[in-house]
Length: 267
Image (tube, rainbow, N blue to C red; front, top):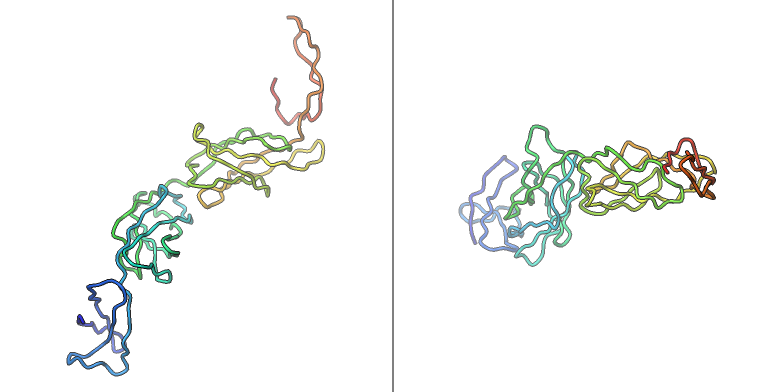
């Protein structure tokens, strides 16, 4: 086999440079210069894994606060990827732990470091060493922030589309909304470049108005909008008077139920 000169680190440790011409399992034994096996040194096998190609099926960006899970796809010439190896994701110069299942690597983004570029390289490493033969780019963006919601007043009967506007509300996947403890469906409106939330149906005593804080689930994290949505009982119109008007009529009287001085309505 191939020989490499070991480096003695201390009286209890030595480091062996890897010399491998093939991929897969290779034997390793520790011997002296006269090719005599050192007492107590047992033959062992190590696995020489080829470099992997890394891809992503989504644009790679995330909040500068970090804490967002991303998925990378890896492919290799090896028959199998080692799922229990110490694989990590390398964002620029910072490595974070990762898990690998078959060909999918998952890791959590680290926080952005101020005074550094928002665009960083992204690769994977194995036991702290280079493991990918190509490089991806990851972009840190300002943390998503809500600036406006409309409408603010909605009916307890549900089904109202609340438009949420703000900074970097760009979902890469599923969108969910939560009004207080009531979780509902949300979606990205590409026309308005905003997120829309569908209000839930809520049980409520007649005449009362409930205020619920609004939260958004974007890119794996919950975002507090720091704004509230007010639920009021449904408004029903029973009659209008007069039905026939002339220029002298200044207003029309609307009869019904559910009106409140707090909830603005428009004619």
